[in-house]
Image (tube, rainbow, N blue to C red; front, side, top):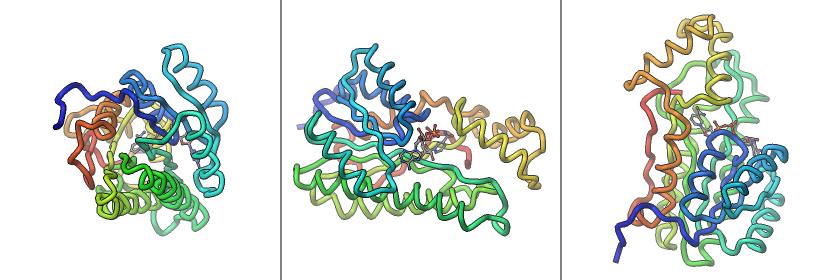
Length: 268
Ligand SMILES: NC(=O)c1ccc[n+]([C@@H]2O[C@H](COP(=O)([O-])OP(=O)(O)OC[C@H]3O[C@@H](n4cnc5c(N)ncnc54)[C@H](O)[C@@H]3O)[C@@H](O)[C@H]2O)c1
């Protein structure tokens, strides 16, 4: 029998990747407040330390593990450490992402293309497959992948990023099909233009510098151009993301899998 109460994550151990970044940390705060025990994973040790210090002040149970998600052996060691300290992982927020450079398709460098695919696709796969292999043994779990509206909207100058996020959307759907018999749900969120934060600022500045016909050369104008492409005429606040992630990781979404939830209507 499904219980209808606000999304509770009491008793759940959740792994958040990219936890030192803007979206990862905002979600860590919210998921911790809903009762989850958190394992924070990031490549950046300083960001992890500062996230852990902030969450400790809020009495949120959390541990950190520094890890490059493109290194399968390192991911496996991190998962071992999480299980030792917090027990089995019930939910994964597979959230690391790198935007790549901002240049038109015919100038896009192979080196950067491969870097974006390595982090956003191969890295996401490594974490997804390693965590769900353990969830299969445990008898179930939930996963939320951070895709992007860039997967669907054809944003200019973001060839590798758009390609990588489209791949992650495909990965979400096939993983959902493969893992449903094992009681594992796999869904995605697709933020569009979200801010304030590192990615918003970087995107505005790099689109301005890219010299395309689609955006002005002045970042202040680019900001307005992007906002005018959003139906709600404002960028989404990072704090408007965690509620959807919590819902998808909670038992409230117990019959939802293979779904991608767009957050705000922009394309980037
Ligand atoms: N902010 C936005 O506007 C926006 C919009 C759509 C989608 N997204 C997606 O949301 C996710 C989070 O974005 P964000 O805005 O918080 O970005 P962010 O840059 O603030 O955070 C990303 C985090 O990932 C970490 N990271 C990068 N490479 C790593 C690796 N190889 N191994 C482990 N950690 C690594 C970084 O250290 C950083 O802490 C990404 O997948 C991004 O593509 C963001």
